Length: 407
Image (cartoon, rainbow, N blue to C red; front, side, top):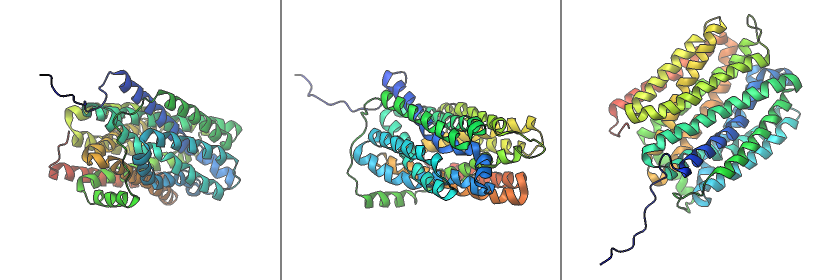
């Protein structure tokens, strides 16, 4: 008697398979398309400040406006992704962002620029809101953390590309031209993403009422294990963006007197994050998430303290160490959200992580300007150390008390 017919349950593409490689490469380009556009303005903030005749903190609002929009967009995008599919939403998100991004450089004043940067950020929210959830659906559980680390490495390269392209072009032809070129690069990366990404197999369409999304979010905000991870995103990202927002203002002043192109070279420190995010994903398998997370935070603190030195020979290594530590921590925390959340609510949990993550970028990244104005660079460093210490203590307490597996 032959066994009854059964339908195989899809458990995700395994590492080394062709779909696995295509997924990682496609999301790598999606990360580039998203974060090159999001942070291109950060590479030209001193130029924006001079051109629009505004203070550094006001110029930094052009970065915060986009991240505020992104934070506001993650929950709506996650709801749309449950109804219409992960890939459909990510494609729409990237195309809409490129359309808005093309308009930004042609706007005359700071107010209009900020308004459209909010719109641009809202559009970009579709990728970070969904990418990690998509990975958990399409990649085997054993390799989800490694895959998430690869995606984060693409986001680091995107952030680097946006800054180092915008700055030298901005110095030569104006910051508006520099930002426009980055948008065109992001559009090209969007096309590559759309061509590479395979048809999803793990997605199950869910017609979830908007009210249910909010109730789920409320329940997750009362789940201690998830709240700890949301806090990591808010505190660490806030401090990280504060450093990159205001370091160029410090280095273009005396005694350094760097040009915008020269200070933009410091953004190559992002390559440390490209490496550390992948390394952290691999270390999680062997050492556990709590260990890797807390260690990464410690590395971040050591790096930012080095930037207090009055020499570029110390500032540059400090920035590299800070970046490596931050992206190691972010890779662990963002991937852990998907593992801790209920499978059917991973999209909402990932969206909440991103909401806190970009809220930190927006609020702390902007408000650190007051620390910079009041206490110069030591004020910014003090703020970053306090935020990282709070995140580290919270992670240690979670490690001591949590009964959830840390691997």
